[in-house]
Amino acid sequence: MSTNYDNAVAEMLNIDGALAAAVVDFDSGMMLAGGGSGAIDLEIAAAGNTEVMRAKRKTMGMLGLKDEIDDILISLGKQYHLIRPLKRLDGLFLYCVLDKNKSNLALARRGLIDVERSLDR
Image (cartoon, rainbow, N blue to C red; front, side, top):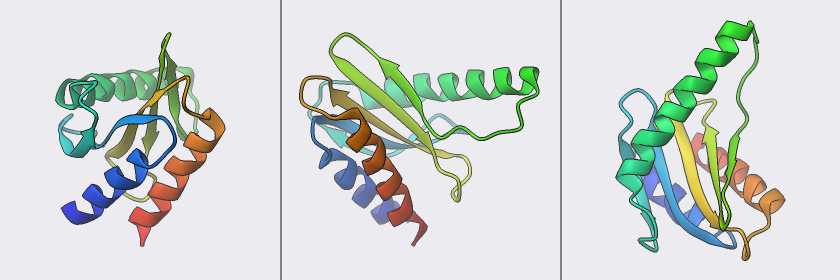
């Protein structure tokens, strides 16, 4: 299965403006596959964004929201960080770092949906 994860990372890195990408195990916080320009330490990002996912799920539970997270967007001054939990591969999420000036957020979100679909096959 790791080849599929490597392929998913390669697909994410083909998104316009992509700087880094990873497939992350939500339960352990470990990166299963990753790559990019070296602009970000993906091991630290994987662990940190696992905490973001846990916090959001906990908050949704406290609010009684019976819904699923499509994606989480973190907008920085120069970057977008997109987190997309995988629906069919429970416990995993896609993580993609984008250069704000070189990316189209709507197309990037669509790109992550396409990557998720390719992992479902």
